[in-house]
Structures are given as structure tokens and as C-alpha cells.
Amino acid sequence: MAHRRALRNERWIDMEETEKKEKKIILSGIQPTGIFTLGNYIGAVKNWKKMQDEYNCAYFIADLHSLTIRQDPAALRKQSLNAFALLLACGIDPEKSLIFIQSHVQTHAELCWVLSCCSQFGELSRMTQFKDKSAKHADNVNAGLFTYPALMAADILLYQADLVPVGIDQKQHLEFTRDIATRFNNVYGNTFKLPEPFIPKAGAKVASLQDPTKKMSKSDENANASIFILDEPNVIINKFKRAVTDSEKEVCFREGKDGINNLMTIYSAVTGKTMEQIELEFAGRGYGDFKLAVGEAVAEELRPIREDFKRYSEDKAYLEQVYRKGAQTAAAISARTMAKVKKKVGLLAL
Image (cartoon, rainbow, N blue to C red):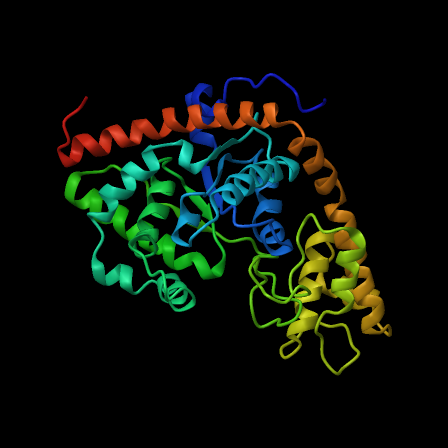
């Protein structure tokens, strides 16, 4: 098969110093709690593919983060492997990017503990995600949910990332990461690079098709609210046909037209057309034509992903080869940062 190539030495380790200086490091992770939505794809993964030639990219499956909510063990293992295969199917190239599974690299948990000891109770309790998830899962408000931002900070700081692609709703966690890195550097000396947010100009947030005031979510109970990137074309088109709009008939982007604004954002992201071009294309045409066009465009955009995912998911040996190699490289890189941290906080070297 075409993807059964021998993996070259990762440029993360072997690249020349000049290349390291020229290219910034980008890091991002995604949880394996279900198939990616169109929102995950447009807001994150689609941009990850584009970044590979311009940046030194590290992408990981954040399976440790998913444990803050009780998971079925067998389902989590399957979902983690599927998520890894999906990243490959979405164009993440293991010869260009560092790609791995979080729990395979022990330094993430190690640094999380050190950073937890540098985090203040008050600042963790103010985290919006902790408040939201505590309300949703009142029967399981665990310590991991509380210290989640420290693990996220560890993920980023281990690789000395310059940029972190974040949605608007995740900026608070990156601000926490910068705060804790600054605090550590002030106490122990310069150790961590302070990461900056990387927020795409378009497609940063895709809303629910049934409630465009909310983010598209994997966990939405309404089956018509979210598009999953492995949905069949007819399913995708039918979901868009049922998408909430408004009582007007004009396809235009303006305040008060949340449903149409969301559909235009999606159409723009998959076709590359500007809002002005979209308005001209559908001038004098009804919402029915527009919804059908959006559905067809999305179905075609996702077609090669569905096909490649099927090939990758059927080749378990190749997937294992890639995630083992990724874990080895990630462990080697992150160990350098972890060794500095241990020395600075006074831990005895082995």
C-alpha cells in the first residue's frame, strides 16, 4: 500500500540548527472521545495539515485528558487508535510531523505533577472548563478534572512550543500555561519558552447545525446537530437540509443570522470562497439551494478522508509502527526538557 513507507529519521531530532531557528514549533492535541466533528476538522485538523511545511509540528492524541470523564476501557482503546488513523487520513504526515499518543510518553505525567505543585488552588478553581464540566458531571468532580490545565501546560512546555492552535474557548488554558511557565522561570531560572496562541482567521469556530449559538460538539444529543467526518454523503446532505436558519431568504453574513452565518463559514472553509463571493453566488436563490450546496461541498471535502481512514484502519501493523516511532521521538525530545526541570527543582538524577 502507498502508505507503507519506511519512516525516515524525524527532522525533529536530525534537522540542522539553522532549520530549527527558521521554523517555529507548533503543538496541538485532540481527545479520542468519539469521531472528529466537522468543527474539529475545520477549526483544527484541516489547518494542521497546512502547517506541516511551514512549521515543525507536533500533534498527539490526548488520551490522558479524556480520563477526567469515566471511559469504557475497550472503547477508549479503539477510539484512540481510530483518532490516530484519522489524523493520518486528514493528511498529517509522520515524515513531516511528530505524531504520537499522549499516554505513550511518560514525561507528560511527570511534568504535570511538577507544574501542579507550582499551580495555585485559586487559579485552577477559576478555570471555565472546570466549572462547566463539574456542572455536567456532578457525580464525578475528580482531582484530574481540577488539575487538567497543569497537564495541558505540560503537554505544551515539554516541547518548547512557540505556537499553540487554540479555539477562542481555549485561550484561558494557554494563558494559564504562560503564567505557570513565567512563574517557574522566575523561581528556577529560564527553562520554558512562553507559547503564543495561533488562532486561524477563518473556521476557528463551527456552530451546531440545530443551535447555532453553541459550538458543534461530539456529545450533542441531537443527531442532526453535528457532522462527523466519517458520515456518509447522504447523511451529511440531509443534516444540512435540516440546519436551523431564519425566517428570511437572503444568504448574507450579518448580525442576527447565526444559522446562515454558520453555514457560510463552513462553505467558505471548504471552498475557499469569501463571504462576498458566497453572497453573489446565491443572490436571489433560496436557503434550500444554499443548504444543498453546503452539504455537497462538505461531503466532497470529506470523501478522501473517509477513503483513507478505511485503508489506514485496516492496516493495524502500520499504525503501530507509526505510533511507536512517534512515541520514541517524543520521549527523546521531551526528556531533554524534563531533565532540566528535575535538576532545577532539586530532584536527584538517576
